[in-house]
Length: 81
Image (cartoon, rainbow, N blue to C red):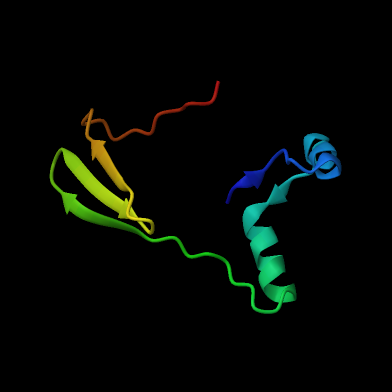
């Protein structure tokens, strides 16, 4: 889930910046349960080519993403810090 922080709506921005954590999945579920006709978006991400060193994928808008393998390591990288 994505944690929503900040907003361009002044009062909402103050609440979110003050530490309120509003999870996007919880928000989406609330909206689906309470807003007639609302449905959470279902993104599409398809892999169109894959080999040992390259993956080519497309999203629901047709944008192309090309990923190249840079390591044979299998341990996740820790980016926090």
